Image (tube, rainbow, N blue to C red; front, side, top):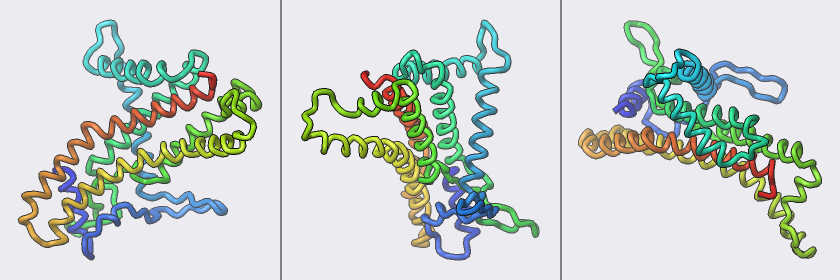
Length: 282
């Protein structure tokens, strides 16, 4: 129902027909250009800032204040979250010599993406559309996922991509690390095919990381917006009987399962890639 509330606000504020794809357009709110770089602040940037702030506050609140030998519910949740990230993601994927260094990154990555995904399903007054109430212009309440923007997920994946190869070279040296890309004992003539394919596979990791998260979050939001939008597109309130239950079911599924799974998979693959670069023989 939250998704319905957000979508209806957008529709009521719009001056043209409802078009779900417009929910993902990002006009600049504050234009900032540094040479050829466009550093403008838009809706996605604001959501990233909100997500970063919530992640920091949540981490500090759960793990820093009021810790005791007899944990309360908050501390229990924090310890369970720590055990999940450490045991299921970091410890199982990172070698011992890289665990202490890269566990904080993996943990922060999981929490940040998880929070961003969750915020994407909470109606917030962060919108390009406005309504006038008592003569005051106010932004409409709606849902938007920063992780449904390919630029955001690609930037996150790029951090892991750079870290992977940086650590591979740092721990093994450039010759040993790049040599590990080639299977031992491979015939010389096959190297002409193997080496380009291995280089391509490294870059495919970057694409797979970013596109997996982006596509899953985009699909969930588009399904919700399209189902609710059908009511207004066909101007038939009889569709509420079908559209609202389907949109609600998708909303619950996304919040209960998808947001956590996607954050877990992204952090796990990042740990696997970095761990594999540190100890390529494994």
